[in-house]
Image (spheres, one colour):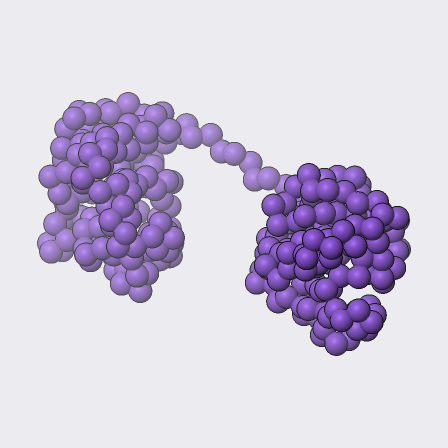
Length: 335
């Protein structure tokens, strides 16, 4: 923890810092729930001075200027948290509605605030002119606040968690490749606007669902590992896919993906079987109650290694999905 300075010892502390040739920065706040906005502005404040002291509002002062229901955390804990930050050299307690008494005791070179204040209109800023100090305002980069966090927690608490439905009840599962199987092949697909369903895919998936089969996607995405696109890009493409399937009533239960490049020699990249094994375990189906549908030898190889029937899609063939659905329907009727 940074050095805690009693309010009555601030004048002596300020004199010691000046005698050592240090430029003093002073700031203050409640810091009830430490968030990115706090940390950002405190780090920026420390870059402007040689030593930064932070005055943490007392519980009584917070109740006076914020709310009688605040703070969330008592002053001893808030002092401990702020004092533990590497950018903070010293902390003290602010037991006043305004920081002016502490500012006049320390006589800092800089009175620093974070936010959208006008430095010239800070009420305590005028006092710094007496010893050549000045007020500085740091624009916060993050749209975050303790109040927003409290409101978010209240909103979440108002929602009951949805009931978790049992996985059982389905007759089997279809493990689907994505690119070239459900959507048209696009090299390193990462733009949602380029997502296009393979003709017949949505209609066939509706038929498979009607048989009582779960649908899951198993896809190699080495473009992530190679740096061609990000995981967020991958998720955005999946979102576009799900939006196109939704009007048909198609529900994808889960998406499994391998982000590794071929050079990483992982066990999850098809024809590796790790992702297929995870899916079968997650949904509780044996290989005999599963099908793999894909467009490549890698899909077929992963299926063969687990003794799961594999069916091939050719996105250039309009009847390809229809044929696959018919084969699965015939197999399911024999169960």
